Image 1 (tube, helix red, strand yellow):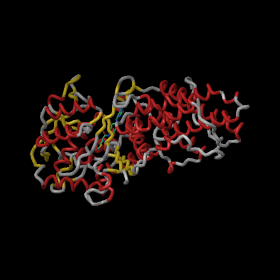
Image 2: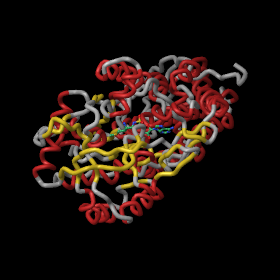
Image 3: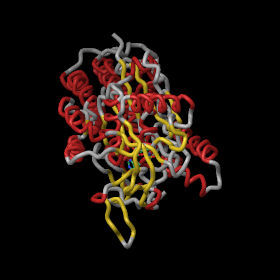
Image 4: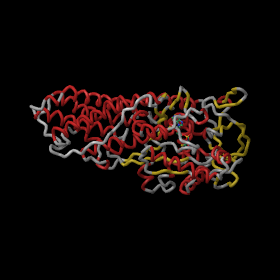
Length: 512
Ligand code: MSP
């Protein structure tokens, strides 16, 4: 039976320069995609850019560019970022593509035909920066400027003819959906926020704008463009060739297994998106996970606040894998995470350079010197060897559960423990003192090599580049990776040739 898994990142607003928050959202999604692939799933992992709406139109004007020209340039930087972050996405969708236009207009037509959309007038608050409508009670005034209480973005008063989606009608069905699918919204704390928002009463949602033109036209009224969130959310099915619901991509991958998003856009994904889909009689996604924010000095990292840690600079300076490792290990997943260069450096030095990197170098150097770079034939494993080797077998099911429940930190803690234990094992066993007991020496080295192999497989979703460098010593290639092989204690074959290892991680001087 083939197992399919569909995971998405949000599609990014092409802002001038991607920041660490953007990088984080993509890296966590890539982590899950990669794990599921090595667990035998056919994974479809989607990312892209969200290019319509007033925010982009204004940004283009500010840059003296036509909107599409502006988007072409900036979308490219996000595409490049996905390569720089070593994302394993299967597709990169742009909302300015023809396939997406057709998909959005089709969804609109269905909603209109079903009587879910009607023409009226909107008057109320709108934040261009969030591309969101806000109610009076969601606004506060600070120093004479009206702002959204939740995002802090300035709002402006809008009065114009607009189409409305009958969101209020779906209140009960949405509450049923949250009740029936306990894990539809994760983490739990955020689920409660969404439920109380829906319970407090939903108003019909304005889904078109008339005062600007940068968007997808309402098919039945050329004076209106479709609200950018209805447009953007549809990307998740456009990439699967919707409206062709018979297409194999759509059939295999919809409904999505997880929409991985930041908590700031939870309402759009957990309320509006399922309501649109319910109204169109399309299946709703299985899960929406709203991760926390990356903070810098206790504030959300964002361009307007000027507190951006530039992912490209960090990668240039310290490398990609250290950054991926740091973000996945040190941010408590689901919560906000305060990051700093100092913490990044100490994490690289302690876990990657001193611990795992050092273990690999020492075991390999020993094998080269004493065993001609060949896997030795182990004798009987003793209790200490087996304790460590079997940790993986015994925790295999837990690891799968951690991933399925988006428990990134438990997964990372397991790896950190195993790296520490393997290092300690090699030190305590002192193979360099056992040169006259070749059977024991061989067993210790065999065990150490097996531990390195198992740990590297688990590290693959976290630091794919470095993990593959290590696995290459055993000639294990990416296409043959299989997480279930960590249950196997005799995967490596005696006499098998071992390739030399390249330097994995450099220790960083904090003053550099
Ligand atoms: N275009 C919309 C998403 C449409 S999805 C149909 C959007 N784009 S965004 O570029 O502003 O944000 C993209 C992702 O980055 C979101 O998940 C957002 O939560 C995340 N982050 C932006 N700043 C962030 C932090 N400082 N920290 C963590 N993630 C944050 O929203």
